[in-house]
Each structure stands twice: as C-alpha cells, then as structure tokens.
Length: 266
Image 1 (cartoon, rainbow, N blue to C red):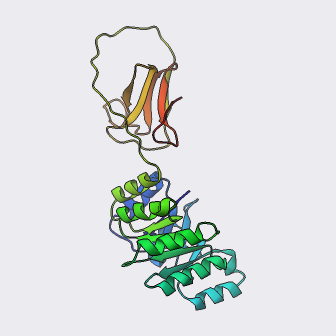
Image 2 (cartoon, rainbow, N blue to C red):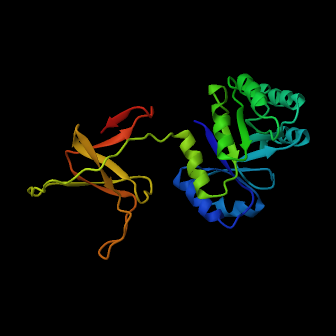
Image 3 (cartoon, rainbow, N blue to C red):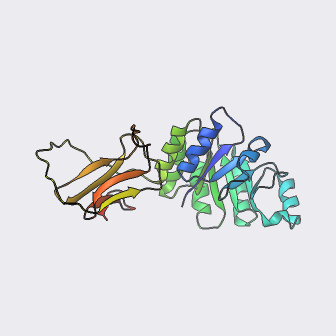
C-alpha cells in the first residue's frame, strides 16, 4: 500500500480542519515539529515523523551523515524507525540515495527534487523497488503526487505533502483509491403500493457522507436507486451522515471491487 505522509510542521489557521479530514480519510502519518507534536501525541494509531530528535516520535528523519552515525551508535534510538531526508540536485545525490538504500542503513528515504524530477526518480524507482528501503517523494501539489505514484508504472512507495485545504487531502486519497463512475438517470414514480409490515434495514458506514451521497440499492437487475444518506436535519431527528435507510432485507447494495471497472452486488 502506498503511504501518504502529511507535512504538519507548521500550524496553519485551518490545522485542526486538515487533521480532522486526514482522520476521515484514514491518513495517519504526520510530519510534526515541536509546535504541532503536542496536538497529536496522545492520539492512538498515528505515526509521527519528525526532524527534531528531541521529540519522542516513532519515526526520526535525519538530514546529515553525522546524525546517521550517532543514531547507529545509540542503541536506544536505533529501536525507532529511521529515515533520511535528501535534496536531489545532481547525479552524485542520486548515487548517495542509492547507497543509503542498498546498505539498509535507513528504513526510508524522503527525496526532494525541485528542478530535476522525472529521470532521477525513474532511476531511483528502478534500483530501489526490490529492496526494503521505502522511497518517499516530497511533492508540492496533488498533480505532482499523481505523477510520482505512477512513474514507471510502479511509482514511489509514498509521498510527503503539505495540504493547503481539506480538498487537497480528499484528492490525494482518491489517487490511491480511484473513484468508479456510474451514469445516473432520472426515473419517474408511476405508482405506490402499500405492503405489510416487514423488517427494515439501515446501513451504518464507517465514513461521513455528504449531501448528494448515498448508496445504490435495489432488488432487480433492471436498475438500482440512489438512496440518499441522512445528511439533513429535521425538526424530529438530528442528522446521521453515516447512515442510509436501505429498505427491505431483500435488497442489494452495489459496491466497487478493487478493479474500478467491476461492480459487485452484496
């Protein structure tokens, strides 16, 4: 699985909104600083990366050989997951990154290439995809992230990205889980039939749905209906944006397979 690390070293005005959206999308890897560590340290399941070696994070990012040598000699610190941050400006930098990976000196390498991207990353992916050192690309935009994740059809192992908005996080997650598309058409209700009392099924999802979202539900191959989620509040009941009132127990729900071209009924 490709890894997304969100760059949260700087505490922006919408910091809490970005963190909440990351949790909504099950993104749990964060690069933190002294300013932001306290906001996340007590949250379970998160993986905190840091360049500040005084922070008790699980993942340390080194930036020079002296730090690497000190880390290797310190048995206590060596129990942590160790990475290396490297700016790629020349062929010599590329060779240095490969040497780090081939010697298994670090668990991951974060590579930032501002001016010279595609060819160096192609070389790194080709040489590093068969070893255990993760190749993480530092990117500035979602478009760059998509490029890095698809280079040589293998892509890097992960990306480091500083989101500016919650929508950046949504788009980023969609790169890993492509959205499949179904053309919807309008239908006319031609009649209503009263049926006896029966068991009613509602579906509680593990996501918060938004206005316009729901599940495709039905019991015939001729068509399914988009049943809207309970995202609207009424005077009688509060909204439940995670829930869809699916209907009777005989209905099916269309869900995507891992292949976005396939649809399965369950």
